[in-house]
Length: 439
Image 1 (cartoon, rainbow, N blue to C red):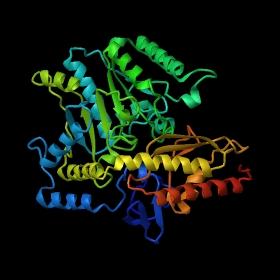
Image 2 (image 1 turned 180 degrees about the horizontal axis):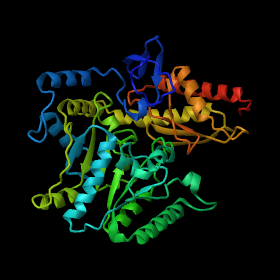
Image 3 (image 1 turned 60 degrees about the vertical axis):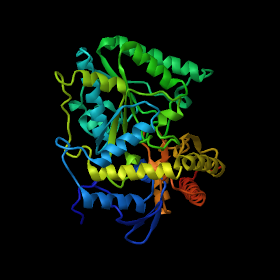
Image 4 (image 1 turned 90 degrees about the vertical axis):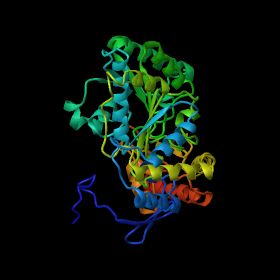
């Protein structure tokens, strides 16, 4: 019996013992094609020797030095690289360990910015319904995944409020254009600003592409620019949470670069930053925010530090990961293989069962129609059977009957075909089990 307090107390987990490119190998010898990179983490697969060598080299040179005393070369080089690759959007980077830490830090930075700007009444944050921003209490307060929030609702912060998500294919009215839909969302958000008091809003935080709560829903083309305009109008900061959808997953380094090139004031990143070879996340800080904090740093210092902030080994892994991505031009492969995956899924899956295939790059959601007469969803059973057949896809929340594809950036044509074929076989077998016809 395992001594680990696992995520589920009722599930038995297979033991994984090795990795081979985009495959994971279990203790009983099963090879599982990682079609979701865990939770959109393992963008370079599971056996990248260059990243491993960078980790080993750094561990031998300097494993750890506390950042209240020192900086270190891997963190300095990685920060410089990220800023250079970000279209002049950012001036500084804070390295942390998890996406939740990054979100918490972005919230605190927004609060500190307004304190430094002599606007201490800005205490409210607006996020979106059906969003996910992390698992710690502040991040959980920002998010809006009801099953995750419900047990802890009494102790979540009342400073967080939630507006409508941007989900045109589901929520657009008949004969409503996408621009008209976005206008309606902005009108609702403006109303929320007025109800709370515009001068009390610290920031709006959104995922440019939703993760597993809604299953790869990308913001409409003009949504982020309208959101940016509204925040600027009222003096609120705009935070993009790209922990899951960023760092190349959308086919550009940042997802916002694929969605109108609207630059945020603060941005969280993680997961693919170090590809799972080390736990690493970050907050990217714009010049606007940094300059104000620097201006008031003596009288109003930003007091927020973490033991493993800027960890040398983690940053060495992140630096090697990002160099590998750039030098191999993997973003082109993300775009090409993402299009191939969509093409294969559309051709193979039963037309009467698929509601929508959506997303960008190698971040794709497949949502099912309500085909079971009992009203029960099929995605959970499909994901489990896909795993049994040798491929992993990520189950979305119960807000949608959907799964998420997020395979490693190194995936090739043959492996994309294997992933699509395995998934299609699982879908059709589930339909047969339930007596549902497939067309």
